Amino acid sequence: MKSFSHKIFSIRRAFAFFATISTAFAVTTFGAETNSIPVQAEPFYGEHQSGVATSRQLNMYFAAFDLITTNRDDVVKLLKAWTAAAARMTQGETAQPLENGFRPAVPPATNAVNGGDYETPDPSTMAADTGEAIGLPPARLTVTFGFGAGLFVKDGKDRFGLAARRPEAFVDMPKFANDQMIEGRTDGDLAVEACADDPQVAFHAIRQLARIGEGVVQIRWVQTGYWPTEHRHLLGFPAEAMGVSPDDAQAMNDSVWVGSDGPEWMRGGTYQVVRRIRFALEHWDHMPVAYQEKAIGEMKHPHSEDDANTNAPATDADGEDIPSHLRIVGPRADTMLRRSFSYNDGVSVITERWPPWRQALEYDAGMFFICYQNDPREGFIGLYDKMSKYDVMLNQFWTHTGSGLFAIPPGAKKGEYIGQHLFEPSSQP
Image (cartoon, rainbow, N blue to C red; front, side, top):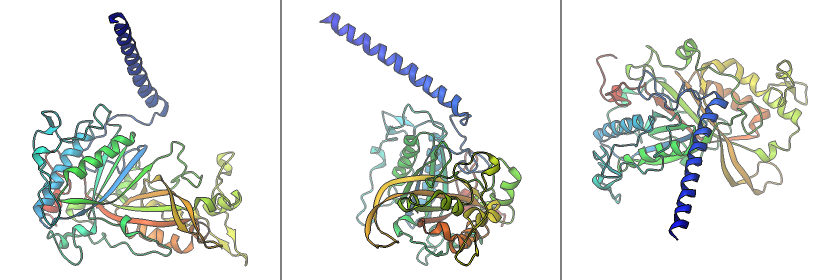
């Protein structure tokens, strides 16, 4: 029996050895084949927040939060705790230092509110980290924080004394033609976007920040997404052929980063627009490829670069031009940096917009559109106002169901927290 047990143990050790070797080889091979992951860990501290100009990761987890406190100090403590946790997690560490197993060495700075029926957990008994990412590499994790309009004024109330510091460019998002917004997928007081090449690492980051913020914030809505390796969105065409390149420093300064014309606390930051766009894939899939190409403005399967562009417009019954999507987008493409992801949330029951007007199951899938600009009035709002009215060939195949506009403050230096200059302004205007 002892000999048999010894053999089993030896076999298990052999399997473990080969599994370790295989895993290491797989990671090395992945990096070599894609040649798109120069480092495993992205820096957290810096002039700008990471996750904007960072080379796009494969997975995204976005979360919008509502503040359930009216105490300004609670918000500052939250941002300090979030900054510290994000800085640790982007380097592959646990959200908080571990001591005595999973208990935090220092209790979280939040969990400060106990009102109504909400039961605030005892910080001294909370785990420092839920542990599902322990042993995983940081997978180029970035955590990007944003401030919603509700941080400044909500329901007519200046809860935190910040109303006067809301930037002029930070306007309310207008309602566009054909919008079908779902309240539970729109807006938020704070936003966090975690991106990583491993979906578990991205989710882990949001999960930890939500736990740290218990009693101060609650999740309003979330959205997951992925970046297809062939860079094609779910309509089957190349994704994001236009827009500012993050490698073009001058274009980033001109169109993306807030400069001296913005308030001091936003300089080096940007404005993020998110839009959850559901594609009517069942109907799109029945359209002839020629129609799809006219609607988008390029060939779906070009044989060469010379025949990739089909910007020649379609015509209506009277022979008038119907501009393609890319012809409409083109003139304003240089006003923003786009960093979108595809999403697939299963199926949902909807009422069809085509005869016989019946309810049916349809894929709840499409694009989680994300863009950055230094003035959303000149960026997304100016562009989409035109698209919502004139992109007629494509508008019948997508519906905007969720939306948000967030101020993304600049990056933090070590020893600072994200948004510090909003809450602790310097002498600059």
